[in-house]
Each structure stands twice: as C-alpha cells, then as structure tokens.
Image (cartoon, rainbow, N blue to C red; front, side):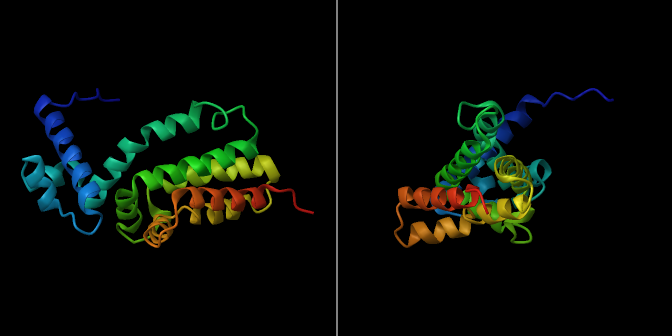
Length: 193
C-alpha cells in the first residue's frame, strides 16, 4: 500500500476556504442560486481549483454534507441513548428518524441541493445507502425481517428534502413535522397481526 500523502498547507487552506464560502452561499441563497463561479469568487480561488479538488458541483455539495454529517454519524454509531447501540431497536429507529429530520431541517438548502444533484434522485446520493441500511436493520430487529427493507425506504421518504421544503414553505412548524414523522414511525414499528 502506498504511503498516504500529506495535504499541502496551501491546498488545505484552499479547501477550507472553498467549503466555508460554499457553506455560507448555500445558507444565504439556497440551492439554485449558487454556481461554482460564485463559490470560487467568494473563496478567493480559481474555478479550476474547485474542479480539481471536488470534481464538480455535486462533489462539492457531497463534501459539505459529509462535513456537516460527521456529528450525526458519530451519534448513530456510538452516541448517547436512545440513538446509540444497545438501546432497544424501536427506540433507536425513532431516534434515527428524528435525528435525520433534524439534520435535514437544519441543512435545508444543502440537502435539497444534494438530493436534486446529478440524476435528481435522493436514493442515489452517497448518504442515502448507509441511512437506509441502518434503519432497515433496526426495523428488522424491532419487527422482524419481513418488509424491513421497503419500510425503511418508505420512512426515509418522509424525510426527503423536497417534502421538508414543501412543508416548511407552506407553514408547517418543524415540531409538527417531527410529531407526524414519529406517529408514522410508531405505526410502522407496531406489531402486525
């Protein structure tokens, strides 16, 4: 295995400047109003630097989401109860959905951009697979293997960014979205005859 090359100091500074500028622009303007040119100008780097570092707009968005999702991922893997391993599967499933919804509400423009990027399918985003696998495993543990895969997809559809955007734009308070999601999840987690 070849040795891991240490990132040059100027490259690290440029990466941080780009991520900070992109983060700020997405928060201020939303998904559709931010171009690679805008990000490069705000970060004080050339457009080529963005493309060399992140590949394209989708790669940059994925890097931003991954950065923001680190704390969520740590909580899912080893966080505190009820999200942490060792808690009952049904409680963990509810906590996972609540955490995902909270994350998407806090990162609306960025998550909307990610889920609409590329093919336009949130199911093809880098983050969807691990969240689905985690939830499907918890559902299988809580209610049995039957339909766990499909039900995980169905529950994750309730936290799609386009739905969250629609609900918040039409005046649904975040607390009501959380309450509705919890009710839906509890009905799925209820034992079936």
